[in-house]
Amino acid sequence: MVIVHPPAHTGRPRALRRPDEPGGGTVRDPGIDLVRALCVAVVVLLHALMVGVTVGEPGPVFENAAEGAAWFAPLTWAAQVMPVFFVIGGFAGSIAYRRLRQRGGTAVGFVAGRVHRLLLPAVLSIAAVGVGLAALAVSGVPAELVQIAGFRYSQPLWFLGVFLLCQALLPILLAAHERAPLRSLLGLAAAAVVVEVMSAVSGIEAIGLLNLGFVWLALQQLGFLLADGRLDALHRRTRVLTALTAVALLAGLVAAGVYSPDLVENLNPPTVALLLVGVAQTSLLSLGRHRLAGLSQRRAAAAFTGFVTARAMTIYLWHMPVLLAAAGVTALLAMGTGIALPEPSSAGWWLTRPLWLGLAAGFTAGVAWLLTVGERGRMPVATASVRRASQAVMAGLAGVVLQLAAGTTVLTAAAATGLLLFALARIRAGAGNKKPGPKSG
Image (cartoon, rainbow, N blue to C red; front, side, top):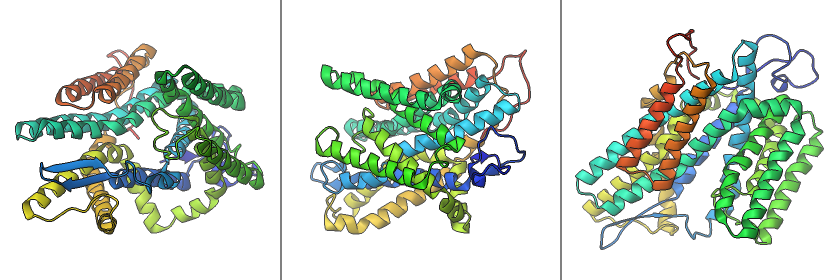
């Protein structure tokens, strides 16, 4: 959960007080926690909506139901939540790191904790998927379907790698923010623009991959401003105009053909369009924090937030295997019973979506509840070595990049599992450098 310090007559609302100000005691920011939980839920439901399963004469057909669908691009203007998720990551990470410093902690300890929290549940997921793919191959499932399953599983793993990178660099970038808040943010945003221009002018699309760093790091930096209370201190009219300007500029660029109207398509590689989305979303988040805080106190909202917050990475890492398994079972039932599955985007397909989305959410929640252990493991005594922590981050990133570049197969899953286990081992303190470690989370 996100922790912030209470106010001491600073003139700012209670939940908005700067975390580096004195004042004693801590309170949670349930409104921010609720938004983060909603972001996780939106990702699960959006991916579930993209699953298309039909049965033809050759056998089952698995496709992206959103591909070429007229309804998907408009939906992404409401459902593209990754920018605000990284903003919240910066918000929560900056507060957590500042509190750690106040207790005498170090940047290395912070990074070690983030490696543990992100990679421990990832090891369980990737290893299990590798075993599952092997079982499918041995049972006679066509190699093409096994390959498709592995590819679909690997696609969302970009988030794990990028979020790990952003959190590993957070201590350095927070120091830059504390020296020059606007200059550090605008510098990253300007770098993202330069990368995009260079990629467009040169025609080398690979240059755009640099924005896997600059775009998401800039959004994380925006979260630092939110955590400081600087955005909430702006006049309400200023924040409204900022949100409207960002949306209008984005709409104009889309209309001019600079960016795709499908905001999910703007993820690969990330474009400056996502920065505009993030600015609009952060402005709206700042405007609505008081109402969100009140809403989050309701019993149902608090229960939902608590459940998702305790197992957010597990939900993210396991929702795709759940969807793939559900798609496979659906195809088997259709072939066994002779029931015709509706074509994606047809009227019959839309009529069955509430049931499909409900089952997807329910099964994902059930699996996450069973596998919560991946996020409740006690943080080991952390290393004080910059070299070991850096090696852990690099090994974790290598494991994710391997999945993204080659797809998830039995071999790549085994290799990635080994790399992630190595990363988790490197964050442990050596024999002569052991102090009691806190519980992860």
